[in-house]
Amino acid sequence: MKILLSFFADVIAAIGDRLMMYMADTGMLLTMAQMTPSEARQIDPILTTVAQGYQNAALVGMALFGYVPVQQRGGKIITFGKEDFRLYATGRAPGSNTKRVQFGYAGESYALEQKALEGTVPFELMEEAANVPGIDLGSGAVRKVQNIIALELELAQAGLATDASKYANSNKLTLSGTDQWSNDASKPLQVIESAKEAVRAQIARRPNTIVMGAAVFAHLKNHPLIVDRIKYTGRDIATTDLLASLFDVERVLVGDAIYEDKNTTKDVWGKSVVLAYTDIGSLADQGLPTFGYTYRLGGYPIVEQPYQDRNAKSWIYPVTDEVAPVIAGASAGFLISNAVA
Image (cartoon, rainbow, N blue to C red; front, side, top):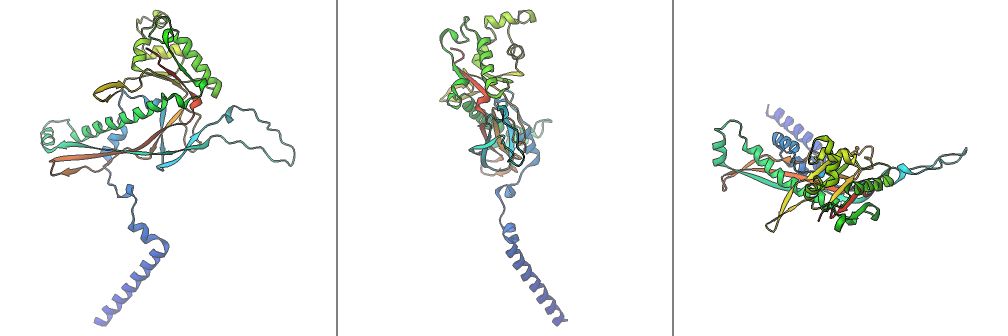
């Protein structure tokens, strides 16, 4: 019996050695020993769903920089030329080469930036909330953190969209004096129409989205020319829907978000107006000639498994996002700066 057991032990050991050698040769051993950060991270699926589904109503940046999932943290921005709008000599003589054309191309590099923050819920509050039906402090902590991360993204999107250096001279205008819409003598409808025509001349499509700062909307909705145009609608003050109808665009959005800078609150979108053609296609068809994208790592934002901090006597909820807004086609946008005084 001892001889038999020894024999089987030797056989098992030999099989184990051969298996280890095979795994080392094929790279399987290395794969099993090293996990990627995303594989090692333990995700809370319920709270991750909460984070991904949450939207702050005051934020409008995604209207200009539509969400596109990517599978890498860095790559090339898909930008667009004027291939869609050029005339080509498509005739071909027998035996000659067929002409080729490329739509969309890889432009400047992008790199996703990781945004991470942890929400804290003290044990005492968690215990008290457990006695009250309908209160979920964990989800609430995630939403609060999402507010902060989303506001930072909104500020980045607004910074790109209102940066005059990103636009050609044909696609930007700075108002001053009596031309500013805070002056009753100004002509906002003509300015908007000229901006739309400037975009159409570039991409053969008119803008379908207008985003304006809160201060701009406050003046524009009471502008005498606007009020005169809507007097037969029964409204004394223009709404965003009425403005969309007047400007002949699909939507007019107001950036109501504010941020604090050195104990002073400021409007994220300032006194600017951005007109843009925005239409998101898939990466498989290389998108559409749209103004901007928000590249975000697939499956993000995520919420990691909550953990206890015994010293702080609190539950901790880590939230992480991997995101970067980019301008894909500046010719699809038009910037009006200093729209009001």
